Amino acid sequence: HRRRLCPFRPRRGGLAVTGPVVKVHIVDNQEIKKGDLLFTIDPTPFQLIVNQRQAEIDEQKALLSTSKEELTSARAALQAATSAHTYAQQMQSRYADLAKSQYAPQTELDKANDDLRRTAAEMRISEVAIEKAQTGIIAHQAALNRAEAEMATAKWALDRTVVTAPVNGSINNLTLQPGDIANANVPVVGIVD
Image (tube, rainbow, N blue to C red):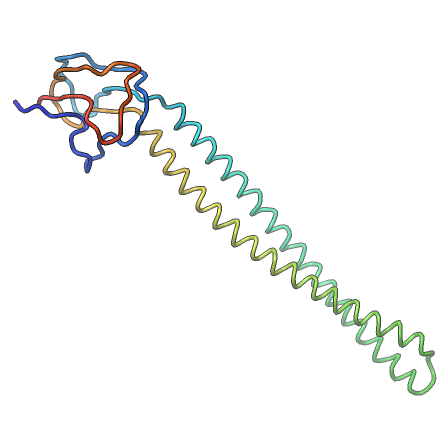
């Protein structure tokens, strides 16, 4: 028989997290099979991280949704401003022709010129709002992707708080007890196979 410490091969998934042991599910000299529950590390801090990551995901989804709504609104505003600008161009052209022939007062032409400038500015404002919303969508999508990746890592760590036997064998010289700190990549249970 050989004595091995569990987790004995970090490349096969050894103890991946550090934390206080809350329950030991084995006794000394107990026969175990691969996959049997050995001990549990306090999952609370890992669950809190999962909860935090979920809140970040929810926040980024809401911000992404808001940016998409802003984009839709800005596009509608651009369409309305473009229509108003087209009308203002037509009116300005008419009043310019009429003012040249003295059939329209200069004040009407001045008003048409003001409307033309105003609608051009409204179009530019809408175009900037579209660009801002598109940038927001890109930024919030990237933040959402990052939050989802961090969630996957947090869930992975939470799953590692339940430690199982990597091989069949028997427990040897068990000293682990609740309250001990299990450190990542440090053997804590001896298994003879």
